[in-house]
Length: 484
Ligand SMILES: Nc1ncnc2c1ncn2[C@@H]1O[C@H](COP(=O)(O)OP(=O)(O)OP(=O)(O)O)[C@@H](O)[C@H]1O
Ligand SMILES: [Mg+2]
Image 1 (cartoon, rainbow, N blue to C red):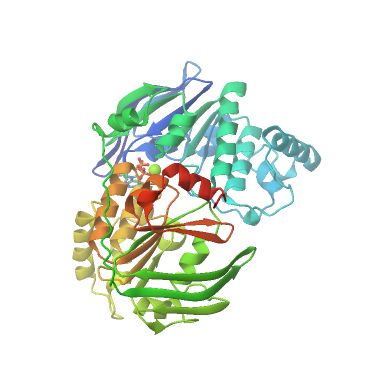
Image 2: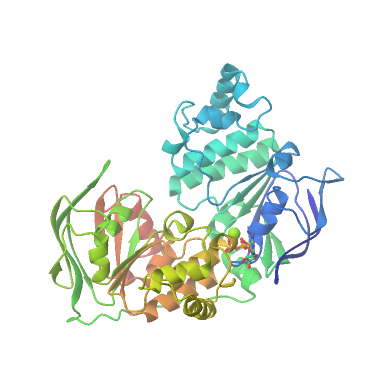
């Protein structure tokens, strides 16, 4: 596949600026670039979700024209969405046949066999009759991959596919992608901020910066070389020294707390958070971090034990009560929980800050403009949130956090951010001087920013009081359940 002089503008933003590149079959190609660089825009153009303003897409030596994703799929190009679409009411099988000519009316038996055969081929465990709503993120991805394969796709696009899946699931996904490239001669385009992933999986990378194609590189290479290609210079991680004094007051205290949710059980938590302390939570998805954080914020009530905020017993109280005591929770799902897609930036700010029934829109608008400048968001006050790139949405979410909170409970605060933006978010967070409990899948980040680390494995917790005493590979062992 060849792209020739692709341009795309959104108002003032030149999101794709004269992009020309050739993608060869049989290869996994990494698409890199800082937040807002134009990666998702380009992928959506290739996959037919939006048209380019100008430029051409060539397949097999001929220019092609298509106008929507179905049309693109019929040309052999399919894309997994960054925020998976919710078609929860359908079963796995119904979903699988969706888009095939004949659709639901297809011979169910043949389709079922095809589905089962594809699952076996890639070791996917998908039951044809399970409703899609009951699938994990990883299973939805698997379903979407085999659905696109069933439709005969030869170019497969994935936009940050490893967000929200475990390390084991990621390995399985990567093995699948490798096989699709090598055995079926497909072209795989992978948008990712995780350089380790890119190094492990890709045959080559291209880099976008401010809408332009600024570089490409063949593998193997080093992380440092990729970072240099992306940012033009090597970035040194900042070393964090603990700001804790021995007599720093406790702001959040859990005594003999028992948490229980579905299959997960955390039998006994004794934990105190000190003012200004930063605690990083590591662990695979579903190991207990999410439960713990929600209990810290009063979103989940403990089965037993007591929770104190600034000495006040808030056991069993609502999030609203915790909030009034200065505990703020921000969930990782950007559009799912934290932000509302159709609302503009100004509306979000107004919701957060305006206490009165009558919103002062002029003031909200001005304040939004200031927050946009402060948090370096690429967007305007009247832009709907969904028009922003993923990373910029994350910046907005961070911009909405109050200045003087006692404790910020942040689920994956830098999810989907490039290295530079992540560091910038941390600079902002640390100047707030609130205590912070955060989770992250990035062990380097956990090591860099935490005064203490808690590793979760199947509801067990291992507290590391001095991160300087452990290495990233130690953490890796703990995360896998090796607590000794
Ligand atoms: N529908 C839209 N309307 C207006 N502006 C848009 C729209 N889609 C993207 N943009 C803008 O185009 C630029 C590129 O966005 P894009 O989503 O392609 O970035 P990205 O490289 O995928 O970033 P991230 O890594 O944060 O996901 C951004 O400035 C973004 O705000
Ligand atoms: Mg994007």
